[in-house]
Length: 121
Length: 121
Image 1: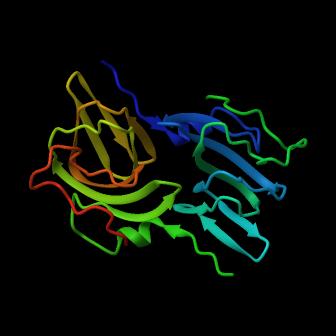
Image 2: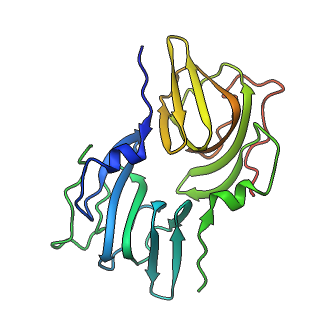
């Protein structure tokens, strides 16, 4: 049988749009999504799950109501469930997100920044 | 409040031993573990869960009974649950593993290659 690894750089080269997560793999009921960010997002939280951010390239800031974390290339951060956060990227950031299948990028906030879910690339 | 990112390179610099996964973060009931590999491991599987391999540095080969996959720096692969596999690294590989809390490195095989579980770094 043929087995194939998933290359982050190759997958990131397949699209340019920002704030639109693309699923590249699943582990049990969790999904691995790559996404490109630049600029400001909206405040939101995920009531039922933690959310993992791994920065593949760039400098991400995640704002919280009481502080912020800077996540650089080769770093990760897990946002605990229920904690309001707002990603911000001054330059473009290429990100690997890990979270359960079905989680929306805007949590339960809805609105125009909500990306289509479960889009594979 | 102070929030701190987790830097893979910094964490990898804290130990030299091989085949001994160290937990660096948790997301819900899943753990992120870093591990250094070189040489051959034993055949094993994980009956209840998929297992994610992300190569931070090096060239990993995962052998299956009917093939193999090569996973290079910046690549990932998810081994499906119940599938027998054997990691092999000719040179040293630095790896990020993601799997549910409680999973042993040797599955249910046991033996001298079984590393202590749930060791944080």
